[in-house]
Image (cartoon, rainbow, N blue to C red):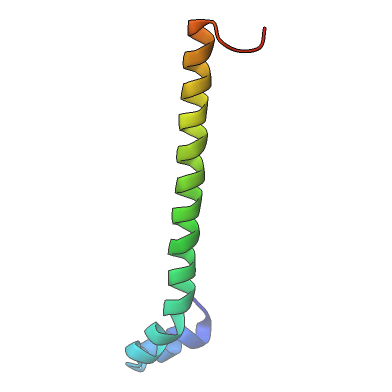
Amino acid sequence: MSYTDRQRLKAGKYLEVAAEKLPTLKRRVWWIKVYAAVATVLLISGGVLTGLSYVGVGVN
C-alpha cells in the first residue's frame, strides 16, 4: 500500500481506498484460482501416469 493510501486511511477515507483496491484484489483472487486449477491438473496427470507405469502401460 502506498504512502498516500496510508495517509488517506488515517484520514478516515476507508471506503475510497477500498473501492480503488477492489479490482486489484479481485484480479489476484482470479489468478490464485487459475494457479490452483493448473496445480490440480498437474497433480492428477502425474498420479494417472504414475498409476499407469505401475500397471505396465506406457513407453518403455
